[in-house]
Image 1 (cartoon, rainbow, N blue to C red):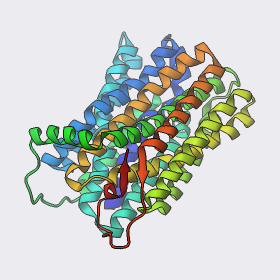
Image 2 (spheres, rainbow, N blue to C red):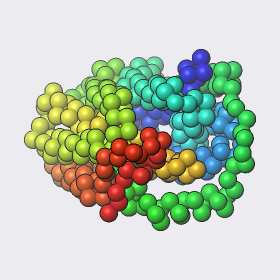
Image 3 (cartoon, helix red, strand yellow):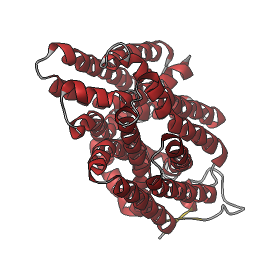
Length: 407
C-alpha cells in the first residue's frame, strides 16, 4: 500500500495537463476565447510548477516529504474546484480558471518530484529500482488514460474535469497520510545559502553537459504537448471527432511513448555508452518523423508517422533521467533533479502556445521547424556528452559522473 500511495502521486500530476487536452477546443468555443488564450490553460499550470519545484524540493529536504506532498495535493484539488466553480458562478470565468490553474501548478510542484525523493528515502538497492520503475509506470499509465478520462468527463459537461481533480487528490491524500511512514532525518538539512551556492557550483563545473541534457528533456516535452495540442484541434475541427474516440486517438502516441520508456528504463542500467546511443537514435527518430509529417494529412498515415516520434521520445527520456540523476553525488542530486523537473515543465508550458502560433503561420513551417529543433538538440548531445566505458578496477559505487568526459 505504501507503493500504491507513492505511485498515486505522479499520477495526479500527469492528469493536470493531459486530461484537459481533449477539452481545449470546446473550452475555447464555450468561453469565447482565442487559440492562444486557451493554450495558456496548459501554460500557466506548467510555469507555476516549474518556478515552484526547486523551492518545494528544498522545503521537503528541510522538513519532510509528507509535510510538502499533502498540502500540495490539497492546493491542487482546491485549484481544480475553483476552476470548476468559475465556469458557472463567476462573472469572468476565464480569469478565475487561470487563477485555479496557477494554484494547481504550485501544488503539482510538490507531487512527482517529491515522490521520487520519497522513494529514495524509503527504499534502497534493487527494491528502490523496482519502486522507481513502478512510479514511472504510474506516470506513463496516467499519460495514456488521461485523454480518455477527459473525453469521458466532457460527455457530462465540458468543465467536469475540473471537478474531478479534487476527487483524485483526496484519494492520493488519504493513501499518503495512512500508508507512507517516513524515517527520521539523521543529519541537518542544508541552509538556504548552501542550497544556492550548491546550484552555482554545479553549473560552473558541469554546466555544459547538464544544460544539453536539460534542453533535450524540455524539447521532448515541448514537442509532445505541442503536437497533442495540434492533433486535438485537427481532430475536432477537421475530422469532427470528439468524445471518447478523440481521447483514444490522442492516447495512441502516448501509449507508444510509455511502452518504449518502460522497456528502455528496464534495460539501460548504468550503461552510459548505451544511454548516449539511445538519446541520439531517439532524437534522430523524432527529426525524421516531424520532417515526414509535412507530407501526410490523412489521419491514419499521420498517426502512424507520429508514433515514430513518440518512440523516439520514449528512448530519450529514460536515458536523460538516469544520466542526470546518477551523474551527481547525493549531496547535490536534489538540486539537479529539481531543476530538471522545472525545465521539463517549461517545455510543457511553451508547447501549446508556440504550436498554436505556428499552426496559424504555416503547417509545413511548423513541422520543419520542429524537426530542425530536434536535429540541433541531437547534434548538441553528440558534441557535448562524451562517455567512456567503465575501467576493470572502477568501483560500481562510483558516480556516473566519473564516466562522463565533458568537452
